[in-house]
Length: 114
Image 1 (cartoon, rainbow, N blue to C red):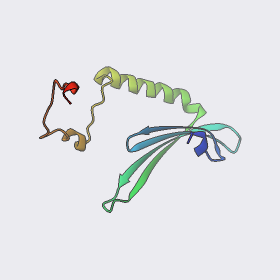
Image 2: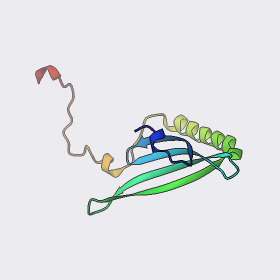
Image 3: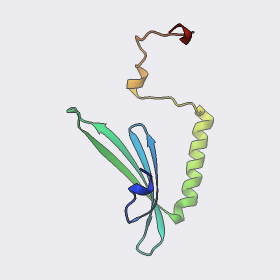
Image 4: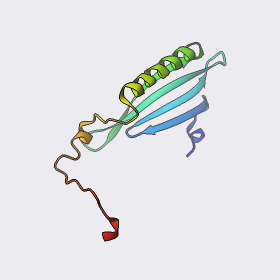
């Protein structure tokens, strides 16, 4: 389904970014004065012990008068991270950190042998 297929009548524009258990929604909405603002929502999926799941959502409302400062701060912060740590993703999730402990390591695999 397209992003536009998930919009409500109050949405002007919507963009969805899926990132593992997290989904980010960028939604343009209209004020009562018919001006636009942006909501950024993070939705994160959690699994309960019984196998059922629920979502936790965090929302930011961003108005036009704050766009330039927000973009500048976001650019500075992301550039700082890339400059300090590079673009390689380092996962700090304990489930992933221990995933290869005890696992055999294979190298020089020749798929012609299969």
